[in-house]
Length: 417
Image 1 (cartoon, rainbow, N blue to C red):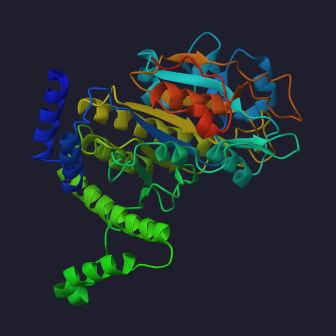
Image 2: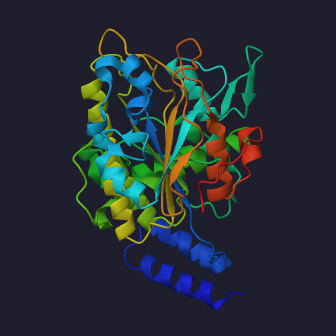
Image 3: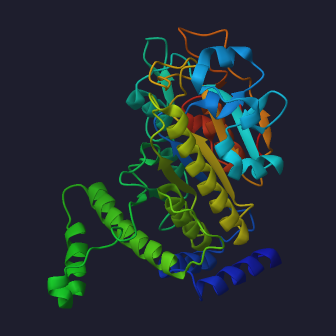
């Protein structure tokens, strides 16, 4: 039996579904209502923003009272008068001004010194560790889960209620942390490409062409599991493309987004959050953080794009009433070396900061800052294992079994209400 609150929630969702919600999402709402599963529990969405290339944490959160920073950084050092104060010792890079209000309101947390033991300085190896939630064990092998950690999260959800589009990956390739053999993930490169492409020469047979593709993917073979996988993947791709197209056509942003790739990608996620009650995870990435040369200009431009895009996205979803439903988390495969190089840049390093944004985030600094004097072969020593951040968002935000998903137990951080 449904209580009054659940009834009202179903009624509100049904009203939205009957007016603006894309058809594939309306079907999900209708099925959920029939099964009585529209519980009054709060909706929770995790948005991942990947900073690809290795973000320079020391010039993102600057220890402006530490003389060693200026000794190591030389011409790359940012002076105190350039910074946005966080406290008496640390300051934001000046191009992060758009997200500074979230710090002031207590909706931004910074986990300092995130990394892992025995760090790799290879982009591909380091990203693989973060994506699969595993790390080297001092040359003895790998510890951790293997497989995409967010894909494993999606796999443990009830398949009867997971919905047509439980996750949205914005990019040309599937983010490996979302990889799953059981749950189809919608990967959107652009709105124009994310649909069944029409043949303008034979428009009259479009329906026949679609029916033929359906039949092709449903052709039985000797492996029923493969039948289900291919048929389900095709249907999920078709449903997802229709839903994304309809959502984009129906959505009106509450703010003007910057004219940047990251902002455009986050706008697509805002549309998905607004129309798709089943959306659990969104993933976007911004590249270019491998700043071996000309770092002052290049890193500053990247932080500006990141800051303005996230600020616009947050203002938009808040204006649409989703501010209590979303947490944003950043990650980068490694930081940069504390000393500058001869090309006006920094080389591959280790530890760096991780950001979490949201109304349910308890803002502030967490973990210890990496020491600039106690180094490991000229690199920073991590102070917080990145899997503690993962465990925190899995357990405290998504309500998922972190130990099972991550392949080990990691302490959580008191960063979520």
